[in-house]
Image 1 (cartoon, rainbow, N blue to C red):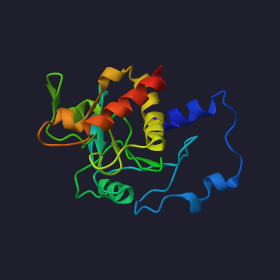
Image 2 (cartoon, rainbow, N blue to C red):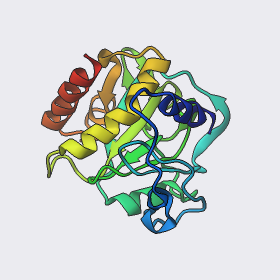
Image 3 (tube, helix red, strand yellow):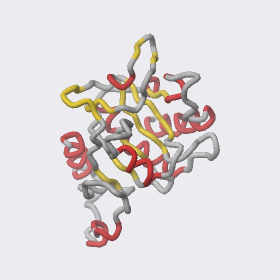
Length: 202
């Protein structure tokens, strides 16, 4: 994943200091137990991260993201990741974030994943072809997002927003782009995360 090689180099150049040297930080025993074909390739500074390759992308069709669409998975983290790695599901996000801050990155941001389906926003259809899709674990209509998962999601999104010159106005959710068909994020939780993201952008 070329984008995340660039991202890893960016973190390496950070003035915050060198990464931890303890061998425990990269121990296989720390990895999430997910039925997936690939192994962890990188670890973020604050949250465990897996770089995977979902088969559910439009091969040969690169996109230039003009928006970010937030989702919730409805199901649990491990099951949702496994579902996106199953070619029969025909579903995928660019990233899924767990309640505890772990995240799985399933595709580069310039790959066309299948996260939005029938969708329209700002007078333009087919959000799959011009947006990054990122999902929180579970159902935000039944629970509030916590600080840890919002931090992890922001850590994932901010470098993408910088690279593609996206602003807070370019962040939407599945409920908005597919009205009447999808119910995530919950309106209150979408507003809470946007407020959190605004503070991180300030």
